[in-house]
Length: 296
Image 1: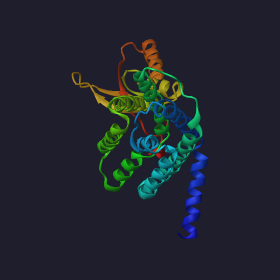
Image 2 (image 1 turned 120 degrees about the vertical axis):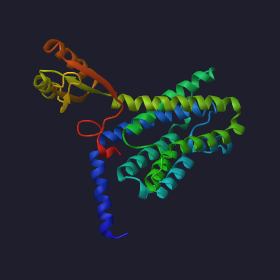
Image 3 (image 1 turned 90 degrees about the vertical axis):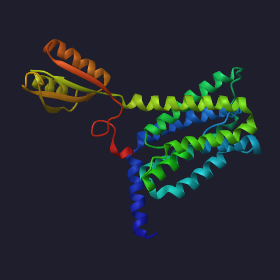
Image 4 (image 1 turned 135 degrees about the vertical axis):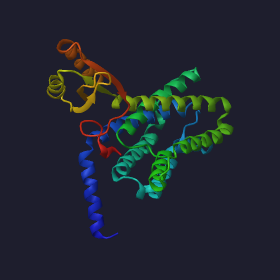
């Protein structure tokens, strides 16, 4: 590698580190609670886990070695394999998340374990806590490695969606774990993994929840000004036409938070009771004022 390329890489790294302070904090918190769930709820009760973490945990059951080593080495190999297909931001944040996870996995090995008898309840708690942690990490545009690196790299390299293969990879890990830990604990582990996936999706949706709002009003100028000046949101004016009357009509379109949507309803109720308002859920919004494109 030439010195010029090395300088450019270091400069890019410096910019990412400077711009992503909040992301590092969120990743730190999400990673920490994920590790706590692993060392206090997954490993002590010999539950399986998904992906590379599952293989690392399984190695500790079989060979009685710290799972942090296999987790760190495995993710390092995957990042080296797929780094050309991954964005610099994703690589830097994922390296940080993986490094912190590996370190905490070793440091927190001897944390006191809660004594619980209900394995189903333990599986539910583990899934919820790991889901919250993983959701926060994913929300920051990073991952905790494993199959996530494989999925992103193959998608970018070959242009195919391989999300379903991630499920099959995790299924293989569970099948390998079953002879070691038994069918009962494998099922409980499957419950934890399933709940974790649901919670991850919920965490991501809670951050991205927006309402797509359409307003048809004769006082559209006032509506537009209220949204821009009072709610601090942008507005798009669409050209509509009444299907029955044939009259041209401006349609105000905007994207708001649930609270801002309620504020707009109150404004319309006091300003134009003849207004027509349509509200729909927007599962994700990317662009200025919302989620940044740099997260992808």
